[in-house]
Image: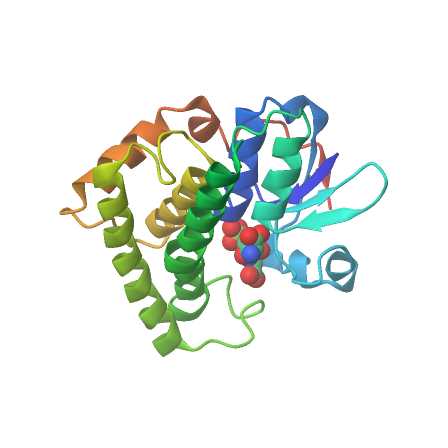
Length: 217
Ligand code: GTS
């Protein structure tokens, strides 16, 4: 399998963490796509992923799977032991809901802030920017942090009692938030404590260096 990604990217981190949690790194070749040079917007890359985003998984049969959630579901199903996306119908439903919520209320909101409320990937790549929209999304993400803090005051993980894709998505959100200087508010003690616990997991700690870059796009 090949994964097109950018080694420090918050969305690619989601798939890197999932790979490490499933011990699948040896099956993967990483291909670096340089976001800062706009390599994800070239016609060649858009043919792989219409949305022009990373990461993208390429299977041995030449098909492509984009979207972190879809890639994680694929990887989690490979060994027939889905530990990240739920084993029972209830677990599956809760994990999917909370992961989607972590995208909507935190990660995607912070990403919009990065692209619209900051210089983002620079003038050559950011063709259209709307700063007001960016700042609104930053404020939405901060509200999202309070929501996830409330959740984590009542349970150890984002979707309940076990580590799951919903935790990984929330981690992606906080990685991106750190990157753009949007700190978790001091009063969100449960979220801060959970994030500190998550950083102790080898999959999270070693995500950037987990595998040698083997090819350039
Ligand atoms: N919904 C997509 C997913 O979940 O995979 C979003 C992917 C995404 O936005 N990826 C970022 C990207 O390609 C990568 S990174 O910002 O985390 O490094 N951004 C480039 C762009 O131009 O939007």
